Image (cartoon, rainbow over all chains, first blue to last red):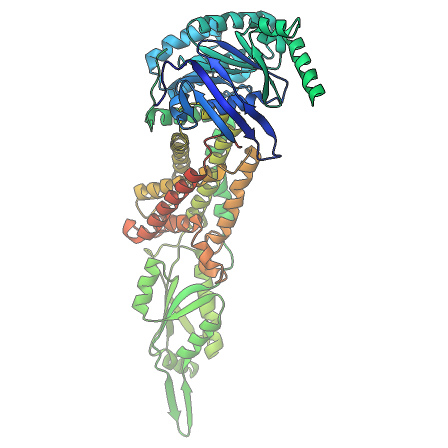
Length: 253
Length: 386
């Protein structure tokens, strides 16, 4: 494993490009992304702006067409196997085995990450407590509500104590009270040194992140701290920032 | 946070997949029911429905008939009934004649090379002629026939009867029939059980395996698995172990239903039969894993099972013996797994063969399993479609 544990960035991409073979769509078009260790980074953009494609290339689930990706100081996709043990991914779809219970799902992923039984028990209690899933341990996933499934999916991505997690549209379809709770939890994890990358098409959601990257047509159109971005574009919300940037791009074309 | 290290291959990750798949199946009553009920039902239906006209049954004919000529005054009569019967048999579509030595023919029947051996004795013409003059003589033919398949048995005898009649015009001959394999004539179910076993295993193992594999694809969990340390090989092996376990269960159900419920006699070793069935099922598990790499959803996966199983049924010797198929299609049968499954199960169940007589079949099925595994491994995806 060639990675340095002291690498400043959890993620670095260099001119990352993805052209899908079908239809020749340039989903990601020269993305240069830098996510610092321990920060909460929100990648935002409309549906189809290339967020999920970018995340899939960074996590190793999708091969890039060109460009470079370094994750936790390791080269992707070369060190993909080594990287995979240290990252957690909660995809946009729930990506759970709906005929299994919450515990069976989480235990399955824990075993893939090489966790022992005792470690699992301890960690499972902790993760389900913070995700408020304690009473659902033996509930079959198909009997859970959407929000519960989302949390079960997040539990699978956190069970092995990763150093970097990806939450793809993690807070979509979750009621405001729970969403506030999620953010509180993300803050706690981040304070503990975990790097969190989340994607959202709900712009104001991202206002709570440390830094925001605005993605449009597979390109980063601006990046910065939420307050800084709003000040820079003289906008009252992140949504307004995004609209202003989009209008500027359209008039520039 | 501690960095976790991963090894190249992990048995624990492999069995994690196996246990997960088995847990999922255990919750799926529909699939479980299909595994337990279908083998029995299919066996019953086929057991009584199978049979029919066959052609090109391989027989060996040993014509020792010396011919006979008798002179009475100025009139003389000569008869070569044996060669007439032989040419009539050769012209008969039911059978495919090889001329040879009767004892070699008998061992050919025992080894499965021939379905029957026919001996035309040296005094056949003489006896026929004597009979036709009203003398008390017995013109008899000896037939050593494989009774494990009634339709083959019937085809040989009918060919022989019509041939002798057309050759000599005589009706006073006798056919001495002897059955191979301990002289047992089997019931319809017993005779069809080996083929049905092979078919049920082909169909159900493919279907259940493909369904189970398709579930992973439709649950949306694959992209997530791609981001974990689970390698494609581990995933494949994990599935293989789980599906092999299910296949063994199906084999057990079939044997329990067949032997326990319908009282089918297995002349060979049950252990060998079980091993053969498990090996055969294993090859199909691997075939399913290979095929599932090309199925995008459950519907496509389900369509693949009959697509393989139905032609196998026709080509593998289940409906009619392979020797009755057109000669140009017979080489195709040799690459159909069911052909070997059929031979394995027939050999062990009906003929009491041991492993020594079935080495080729075991090796071919084993080689097919290896081939399917290599094909599966070389086509398995370890990333999302680009």
